[in-house]
Length: 377
Figure 1: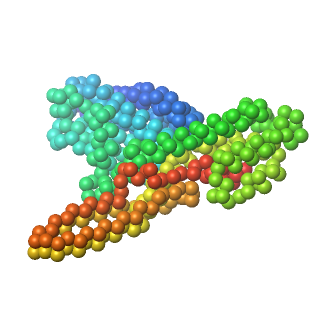
Figure 2: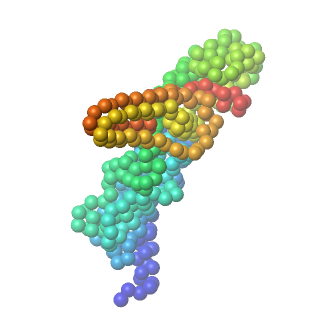
Figure 3: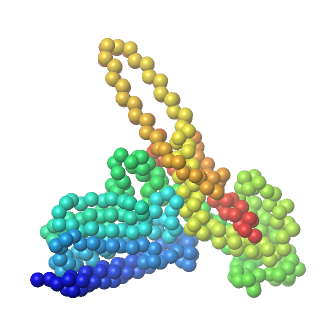
């Protein structure tokens, strides 16, 4: 007979086992997260540790003993940690405005079927114990990715389901847009470093190293003009709404160095990158809602069968600070059909939201980052 004391000891052992396995798995994956984000020009100090950001919980249903499935639970935790690694890389280590994940809860039950659910930032995976005991197959890393990208954790009738390709932090739309943006950022960082290297100021990053006046012999007289030329070439001056030459001409070398340092910081700030990606998503949503599609179908005959489908996304979310630096090419659609005959059948699928739409979204992140920099100084 199992006493209350022994049950408590068993539960404590189980919780300690899961906690230790989770920490080990997340710490292992965190190494890959940091290496991946460094390749994306994201400074490691701006990214919280994986083990301090996410939680993996494992719960056993009544009557299920740990010992027979212990190795499978370790594999299950490792699969969840690998998915969280990808999620952390996908959101550049930042909290997203539109759809965030905080923890994964794995429920192992005696009866029931495999289900995937999501609630308030928690991804819930329910696994029947026979899948572990008999098939020896946990919910794998590939299962996590596939279920998440297909939106299996969302209710079928939810409007989020139809828009999941747009909102998914790991989806094609945001991934492609982010890859393009990061390439543009890397280009600007390279140009900025070349500028500072040309004037021998690449290492002047600490406060005590900053130049204290225009007359300092360490700074060539052409430095100011070099900074102005670089920035005028790097950003959209018209959209910025200021005359850069007029604004920067009166700044001393110390201020110009501070501006370049802060500009580089804003370019590589993952929070800024995630925010403008969110705004791009919302701006695209607004464009979809304002789509000027029209359908005009006229049919004559004894039997007429029509089948027109229009799928729109309605998400009432604000756009945020970066809105004016996001451009979406408006899509206009006009469908006209004129049919005669005894039997007329037409099928028109007008799906306003398409995964290829990211090609019509343009981000002027360089100018946005400079405006933010000028406001901060």
